[in-house]
Length: 252
Ligand code: MF3
Ligand code: CO
Ligand code: CO
Image 1 (cartoon, helix red, strand yellow):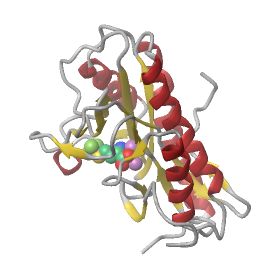
Image 2 (cartoon, rainbow, N blue to C red):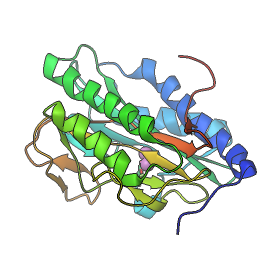
Image 3 (cartoon, rainbow, N blue to C red):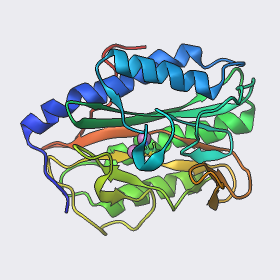
């Protein structure tokens, strides 16, 4: 069941969404060769607690940390640890904050030092894939329209779209209906209405689309070990389009 959020609900979601976005602004200057993903986790955790917010990933279905950090061929749900980032790596930092019971969910893939040409390719295709999806969102557009636009763009760039993980409704729950697939057929699936709040978060691989989950039960990697990048926003369907809610409180 897809819930329609009221204007008051949207106002109530803004602080969590803004805080998640501000967390990415806070972390960006720390993404340098030599930092560990555990240090990223600690910075995110402390920034979140200091704001009176709750880091939604911590203990979510047993997830052991406060943020997901997915490096290079890790697609999503990477667990922070003692791994040091090195020049040329990429890392997706996926932040979900809870304030007053409402969730905001956003992620970005950062360059660590200077990227190689093929690294820049997959990251910029993933960045644009999210924009391409957002551009479709308006009342009457369908979820299939969003998925198709993303798939058409990404595959046209000779990259691939991960099928096993998707965007999602969000609100008082971290993951609500609907599922927002990043591939599909135009005109199929749910028609959007004002007040539907959801994420778009395409995972784009430089090689084939196949993924597997490591034995830790969380870390998703590309089967062919090709690089994978992802960007995510939380948005609400408005009367004439959409509003991205996970924007920072000031420009970085
Ligand atoms: N933030 C992820 C998403 O975009 C979900 C992470 S679940 C966790 O939906 F448990 F790994 F944190
Ligand atoms: Co997320
Ligand atoms: Co999400």
